[in-house]
Length: 209
View 1 (tube, one colour):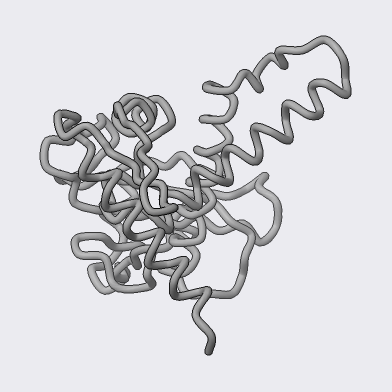
View 2 (tube, one colour):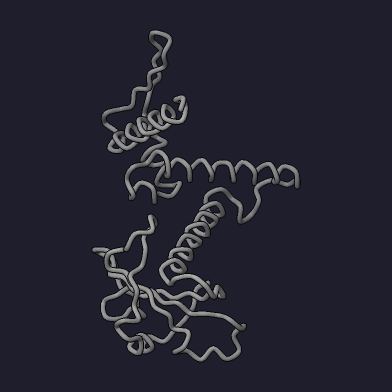
């Protein structure tokens, strides 16, 4: 979970106490580091075995710093009771979990899971199953079809605006269905790349070994 800290504590971390952080592919992230604050904080009253890990990174161009950021670095901290594991691995696991929690937030905001829309228990149970299926499809679409890292971070509202509402027609010729996307749609190329990528993926998994 997230943790609070005093910014002055960062000055007590020696330079060799910072370790390069990892990206989603377990490679070193440029401009990002992690360190441990456990020994520098008063954890009296905390559960036994808790650790505080802090990360710093250069903000993206145009990003605004917060009041608790230090020396132009974006600072984040979290706690864990995991005793083993390298700091970069623990920090990467935490960020991956935060991404899962973000998908839960989206499901609540977009699909009405905050207040279930139907009256009967069974009907709402079916609704939740549909929402879970839609969330899975969006997650797999981003992973398998969308080649741009920016497009992979689009939330449902933006996906609906940029991709799901692209004008299109279906033509049938030579026993094949051909999808024609409007060339005036500014994000049509993203959809074309996604469909092409999925076609290539299906060919690979269906080809005999």
